[in-house]
Length: 258
Image (tube, rainbow, N blue to C red; front, side, top):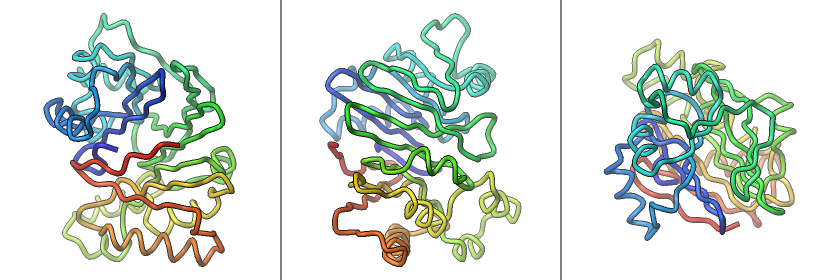
């Protein structure tokens, strides 16, 4: 994860044959700087998957798409919103509309868009499979339903939202309406809600969990980590075989090989 949070989101997933970027809420210059710090070749990127049309996820997408001539994947409503915002331009042919709960082949990856609950036109997370390995990317959701949890359970790795601490959110200087939005079913997961959802997802295969999209005003990395660890232990999850990773705004997280 090159950057995670309301300041801008961008994540790279790579196999031997395929390289894709999930969202690009950063300027191209900043995205290239972060890629370079990881010793990564930006020209390997061939695809961009869009989760939803909020600016912290697509602000820099248009420039990156044209710079690297990327194939763009998103739901039809999300792509339409990107056209309206002039992120995508008429005549660009490398655009692929996807539907939720349908598997797609992207190079040697299998990818399924997953329903989430957020105040965007048609937001999704993504479930990836490559051979016997699997990864779930799920941020920007107000809650997770039981059917979705069942669908994505026991993956090898999760990139999962731990956006806020409820008490810190209630006490911070953000407008009351924004606080209500964040706490709603179409807002963001708290540390506690994320931890309880993860306790239902983690299985024998699960090795890595990335705590993502932390609020800079209503959360702290140590608090998010401590809360998730405490609740997982309380829910009898064995942490000995799990590695919890922190993510950061404008700074790369750990690189993990599954």
